[in-house]
Length: 68
Image (cartoon, rainbow, N blue to C red; front, side, top):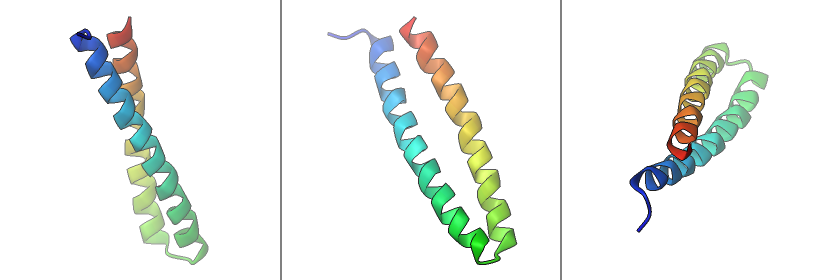
């Protein structure tokens, strides 16, 4: 049976991959929105993207600690 830390790290890694895909999709939609002049929605999307980036860094750090 796999070590609990390895299972947790694998799960976090899958979540991180999904989060990265969602971030890319939000960026695409945000570009489309910004090109059409919706500044407020663009600003909201940028705040969400910043939060995703911060959380991604924390998840990557946690994965690294679990794997070491």
